[in-house]
Image 1 (cartoon, rainbow, N blue to C red):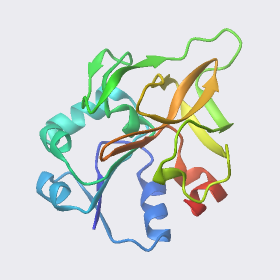
Image 2 (image 1 turned 180 degrees about the vertical axis):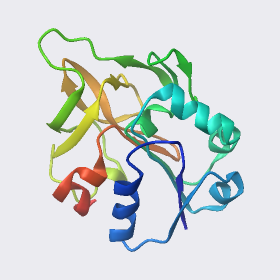
Image 3 (image 1 turned 120 degrees about the horizontal axis):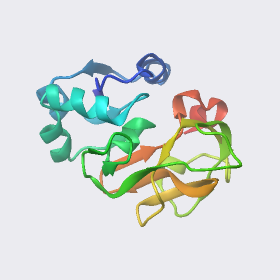
Image 4 (image 1 turned 90 degrees about the vertical axis):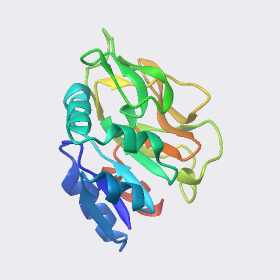
Amino acid sequence: MIAIVDSGGANLASVIFAVERLGKPYVFTADAAVISAASHVILPGVGAAGRAMKTLNDNGLVPCLRKLTQPVLGICLGMQLLFEHSDEGDVDMLGLLPAQIKKFESDRLPVPHMGWNRLETKRDNPLLNGLDKNPYVYFVHSYYAPTGDYTVASTDYSVPFSSIVNRGNVFGCQFHPERSGKTARRS
């Protein structure tokens, strides 16, 4: 059973439909016991870091999420929540990955970064299985994770940033795999 965590994000319906298309059993929940017992956990999110962390804290989910040993996938804001801190609202986050989320600053490109952009693979990873080399994926975000030893793939938008991350059981996609068309259906 896949647990889709209720973090107060706005992309829940598209994530749920994507899991349904895969034919996988899931539950949408804010129950720590259900999340802890799940085979896989998805942390979706479209919104603001401060509000999402408040929702997770109010539901008592932060200690649970920090202790998970099964695969955890953060999507968009959900990926950012995996990091230590965010400049968005100056908020502490889950601390599962060692970096601070930064805001895009660009005089030449619009913020938010919205639309299709390429992944540049940095290292092999199961999240890349079956994908074309450097595929296009769909992004909508104003904040980004810098690259580091956790970076699986990066993308450049005024600066290089982590578009796929992984450390241990923790995975993340800054882009929206559920909105990335053919690329998402093949992964």
